[in-house]
Length: 194
Image (cartoon, rainbow, N blue to C red; front, side, top):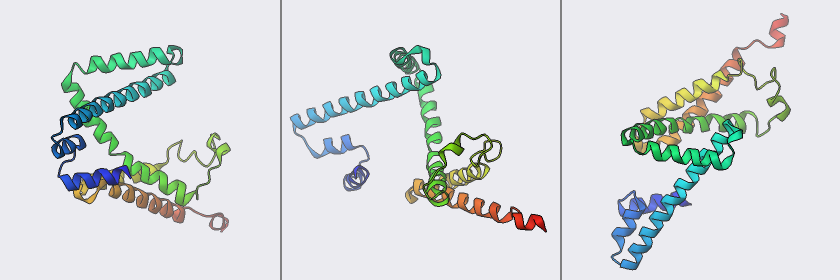
């Protein structure tokens, strides 16, 4: 619902930044003050959430640190890195490209779980080193190849085509196609007996 409202507002106003769009729609000083406060609160809330989740990640890596020390460490690192705007700019570009892999990866996960596994997982087999989820030395080759196809399609289509949908769809189709092709090419027990 939020995506729909945001998309509609952007199309109606011609502005993709909702704060700019709302500020252009009113000249009321109290409303502009409320908008400014909303921007500040939103910025603080987003950064607190980011620092907290970063701290949790550090705690998972180094449990003896504890949540508070890990969060303070993450916050200090963020403040220190913000002193180097060029580094932040390059990091943002890298994170954007890394995020572009998320759409195809989502397509593969959905295709595998919803279509192939029919929303059923053998939880005990997840921990079996020789189980069905072991794939090829722990790597699902079909999934990696399908994500690569999805990323290629994601970057190949124009932005107007809603790249995310194409990335998800291409990766899902590639994954299901690769799995079907490999299953068809693999010898069955009946052909091995002949």
